[in-house]
Length: 350
Image (spheres, rainbow, N blue to C red):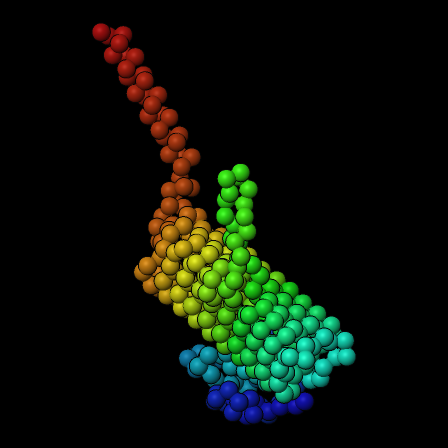
């Protein structure tokens, strides 16, 4: 495949500068790109590579000031990283759509399968499942009774969608993720053991949700655990029963949201964050990695870090104080010795 910079500019709605007419056949990072590659520049730290890159074309921001000669075609875009993603998805995505139903797949006669669907080896689809057009089910996927999968959604190998659960359109669920496993519900009994509480709700993933590998999204005890449209979960994220994650929120790997917690819209949650149950996280909240959230965050668009988490500026001040603690301890000991000596002198002169 050979593309022109003009074709790419038209695809992403960008504008051309310094057009070199070098054919584009692949992609590369700006610092290591070769002739025929297209690259992008979104981080100012990589600006110097723009003047030395061998790329045929580079997508840059509309605001970028280029004050030296460049040998590549410049494609300006208001969001260069997003523009580059459009190019990748259109021309260079290795996960091309597949079609057909493998002979080893087990599909209930009561299931409804749409058009242009791919069902890989050893996939199991149970009774009354609805699979919409363009769905891709890689090998060893399991879909339980009465579940629904929206159009153009992709399940990678080993995904488990339990009964009654719903996944929307244009979702991507990576390998090993379980959607609809039981919530962690147990009632203590008189003898100190625990009785299992039946989890009779479901999970709803709205449109354009993506999960990483080996995520667990638990079904509700009653009602629904809900992942709103546009949410992105990294690998090994745990969402507990009856939780809700607001639209376009992103959660990094190894984080956990406990039961019945409501996470707002447009939140950014770092890796290894733990959020307790039955609280509310306001829209636009940003939480640093390894933080612990013990109570509700009610003010929107604030930043928190630490365990227990505190506002970012307060956390930085606390870190300064913490670093000074050894010196402060030494000063306190010295003052105690001075006071002790003064008291001894008073006693001797009494």
